[in-house]
Image (cartoon, rainbow, N blue to C red; front, side, top):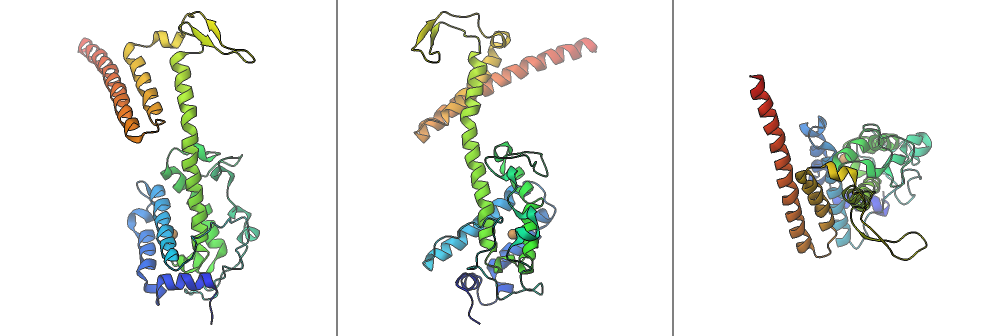
Length: 296
Ligand SMILES: [Cu+2]
């Protein structure tokens, strides 16, 4: 039979025998590797980056054939009529549905996997928006803790097996997941200025330390005399202050437009913070050893 364009393209990519195709094998090997079955180490990060790489390689192949990269498929919508899977590979047979969200509403993108967020907590950490995930590993693990497999299994057929790449919707589905990963990267970048602002507030306090100029709402610059100083700042040891200044400077250095200059600045800032942290912990160790000696 004549296959639809996208299905034919996937078949061409996988080669004449999709079951034993090295490209298919690589996907299966990844999923059946002991560390991935057991989800040890940074499994979540590996899950996202392995599939990202798969998509990139497929897109590179598409380019050689004159096709545009795969477009992400939003699982809240039916699978496009241009993406049929007419020739199933495994005994699982044909897809069960082309509209998985109608079968299981849990197929749609959970709000915690969006920049805007919402009331749904992610299944592993209770986060409610992308920016709350601390790293790719957490994000990958949460995506894989229900949502990812639910979409595969609700579509059914080959999608519910490790041979899923033979179904043309595999690629748009994983592209969609990769867009969630990319949105998380964006949320990280958006978080930085907020972090810098928080540090600046701690460093210079809500109570102004020195004479300067403020710009009140609806007014021009107004000179102000020095204040009593931020109470928190005043109780910190010089080493603790250096540590905070070092961390702030390291954050600011990432905003320098010249990458090399920024990296140099960042290294110096980290050196200041590290040295200060070491002297803080040396003091603490000193106290502890004096106490231990007194107890002996
Ligand atoms: Cu996979």
